[in-house]
Image 1 (cartoon, rainbow, N blue to C red):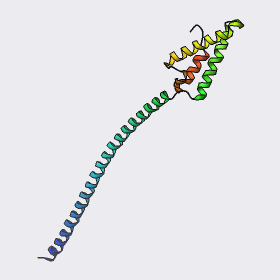
Image 2 (tube, helix red, strand yellow; image 1 turned 180 degrees about the vertical axis):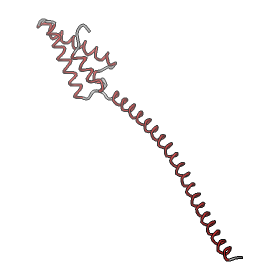
Image 3 (spheres, one colour; image 1 turned 135 degrees about the vertical axis):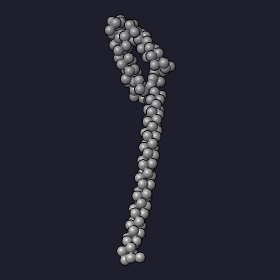
Length: 150
């Protein structure tokens, strides 16, 4: 073998080794990219599932909150305020109808019973204290705007 051939062969071998190392490095990089892509896809699916589960949880919490809101009855202070409003409105209506002094107390009582009866009927309860807390404002409006024509 000539000197030139002796120099070329080691250079070619070195070149082949370098190419093999480069190929191996590229193969490893390709596998890493594939794994990252797979992980990203999995993460995307997991994020979508998490969003769906969170939305379901939010819906359930809202339903429970509505259920609780509708099952909580009037607070004692609200019951007292509603009671006072019925008392005041019955007196006001008796005065508006110019009831005589002799019949005033009797008329106020009749008006008061009528307001209570209509109020309980409106909310489907046996006692006014069982009106849902969430309906307190509506109940007060009903009493304050109650008319004997109702």
